[in-house]
Image (tube, rainbow, N blue to C red; front, side, top):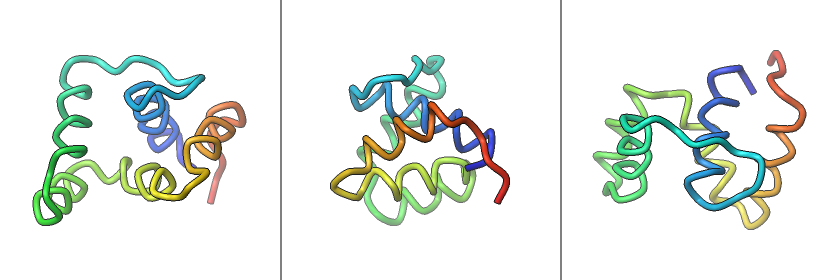
Length: 80
């Protein structure tokens, strides 16, 4: 994941109660909350504006997604 995606993943891990994440600022907290509560159309609009959340949110959809993100945070950014 890119550095931006790692930062987004860290915020998401914290928001959803995982380990190793970090607390987002107030804007980012409200953005994540909006993503969490948005219907499909509005989620797509938000992700178009904040694409760094696409990959981490997709990972979280999997059964073991939180564990995958927690490991990604330990590994840090990687170049695709």
